[in-house]
Length: 202
Picture 1: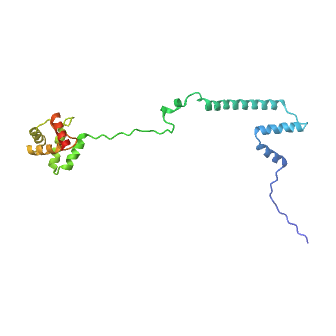
Picture 2 (picture 1 turned 180 degrees about the vertical axis):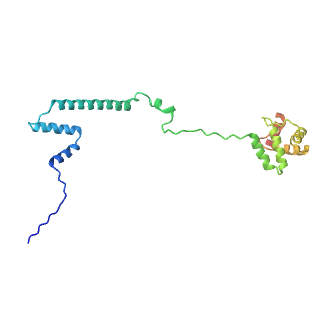
Picture 3 (picture 1 turned 45 degrees about the vertical axis):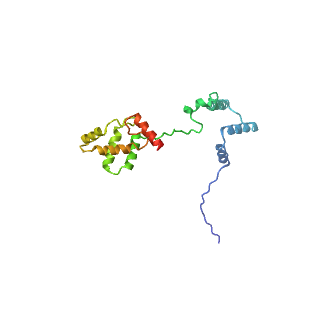
């Protein structure tokens, strides 16, 4: 005995016109125009209306003008600086590799700090180092010690309320005169030259 059954299936069928329409979506404007012109030439029943023809010509002229203007701007950006020498367009005349070179600055130290450092290595007690720093600060810009031993001892005693003997000051001054540069701590140019000559021949 025959049995019949009924089933439903959903399927999608695309009409040829839809396929053709989808193919049109992938065409550019120029390709679409060529396609229409080709169809007009092949099919004598098709006629091009005057309005569409004018619209296509207007669109094409507008696009051509825009492309020409864009090309003009592109050419201007590319060739605007051809007549200007390279050294004028380079910012602040920097080098070609655009590296910033900073000159090395030599570290300058105060000669008084250098003398104090030498004294700190030679002296043994904190009292002597204190007196040495006080004496170095009394040196003038030429490195001469224009104060007498008695005046230095009195200044230290008065300013720091500490009794200092003349012998302590004389001992530190004697060590100061042995340091470099030769002639440091002397009274005047004559004594400085004498110390330099003596050190040279010794």
